[in-house]
Image 1: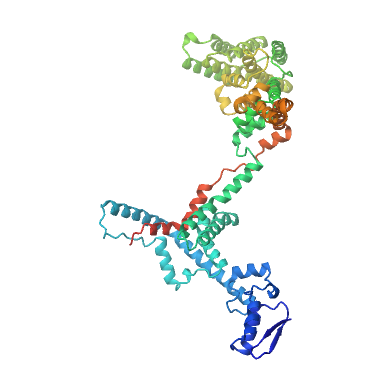
Image 2 (image 1 turned 30 degrees about the vertical axis):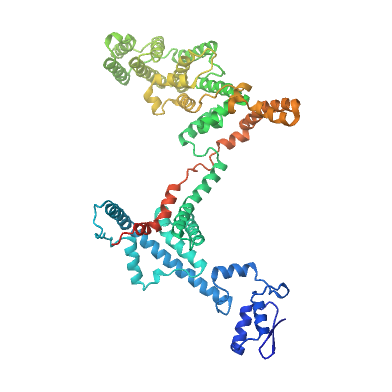
Length: 602
């Protein structure tokens, strides 16, 4: 029990744990406020925690009670219970928060006028400082500035919008309320945005202001705190995103092209996939990177050959010769015994090819085959006679060669003429009921065109491995318009993806190449010297070996499948921060104070 002695010697007992507030309240109501005895004063002092005698120290408040008192108000303010104090604190928070939102809204709506006032104030201050503007000349104030609207709103509400929190919680609520309108206006009403650009900078601003209260730097601290809070969420977001996706934010178009290579079975490194040159070079300077180069080139060549119906890993002369014979045999087979009757559509298409050829190339530079095919076809058409299959195949062979000509006009004319001849073949097969041969012809036509591009690209590749750049050039050479529009089939897609994504990896996985990546090229020597200083020559030798091994181990880890997947993942791609926007939003509540800082009176 807690005992309290009255001036007349009477002892009043209270249950253990009774708070000093309750004891004092009961004593005041029951016995009034008589002159306290020394014993009573000592007892009340002990109960209030003011004594330094540990033997009679009162029971300490719980952590929860302490936090409660600090947030809601003074525990010795005469309020009878925590419930009453809580109600008053909630009311304080609500009033301060609502008033803050009102002030923030007025500041946001009046922001254009405030900025105009700020500009005029700056001009006035500069003008008076230089003597251009007289000292007694007073500037005006926009009736629609944030300050003007805030004043009007205060008058209309009887000062309710001027309310400031009396408790710590109320003070924070009021500041948060001032920041929320700007966050909503420039970021949206989502809870995440309101917290990120409203609550966070408001809390950091209020915390900084309270920390600097009474120092003369309070306003500056509030501005700095708001700026820090405005950029902090984005800094944290960026850091977390970089941890999740070290190379996030890769070009979406590059990632699509990398997916094309995946579909063709061409292996690529994480650096190539995301377009990170530094990572690509580090990958190349490993044994695994060197092996990837060889595997990649071989897989790319094999994928290209498959578009021409060739199952091989390299475009060697033997492979290409066999493919030419095989595809040519298909044309011979599907046209054998076939009567190819020209029609007006074929004549029109051939005539268009010849006319375009004449307009683009001088007569002396024109290959005669294109115009000859038109003349011969017209003669057969007028005579009502079919074109022999052997003649059609001869035309096809000659026109196919012209599609790889160095002259652009010749290539385009040959391509159009070849399409007309193949259209005649297809029409004849349909008329003869040879549906299977129509499909075989279509496949052979596609494979032959791809074969010609591959053959041209392989001319300068002595090892039979196709270069993505040369293959793409060969495909474009056959028809730039079709390539640009993505109408060049699988070979066009493969060559485009290879040319854009398969950047060369430095093929140097040797120790010398690895040392070149280290400061001064002396990483093993540094390790050796360090261990040598501790354990002598034996340690130096061991350190040198360790220095040589560590880059290799690091490279192996970097090129391992899990690490490559981690380095290339795009789970958190948008890590570029919006720190500029966050800082700008955080400064909106201080726009009016900036004008006041210039000390220009309206």
